[in-house]
Amino acid sequence: MSLFQTVLTVALLLPLPTVPFAPTPRQSAKQDSASVTINPREATVHMGQTQTFEAVVKGTQSTGIRWAVEERNGGRITEDGIYTAPRHVGLYHVVATSEENRAAKAVAKVTVATEYDTPDSQKLR
Image 1: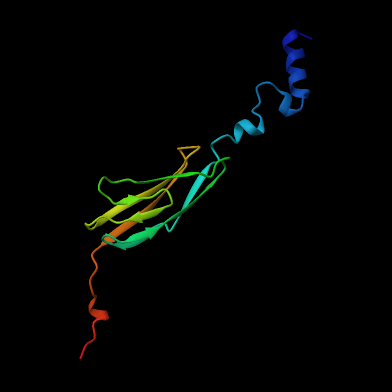
Image 2 (image 1 turned 45 degrees about the vertical axis):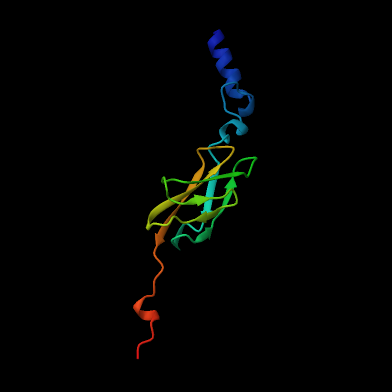
């Protein structure tokens, strides 16, 4: 038996975690399993009003969240997830990103609308 055949036979007979080129469970689960969910996923907010968002991080040691509004002049959000709509209508996006793994993020759509009475809410006489 050649040296190559002996090494190959020994490598095949070893348990998987001890084979030098096999990934360990810790390596394969690294940051790929990190995820973020955001609630609510969509919201309609009147100009200047607030909306509270919540986010949950899974698959990381830290559960910290970084909040941001994707669009410039699209309102602001606190570190506690409280969004304040801008003074102009539009479609904006609130982003929750894992502090530990920035690839893990979730996005919520926010429609900012004017505050007005709809025809259904007015009393007809």
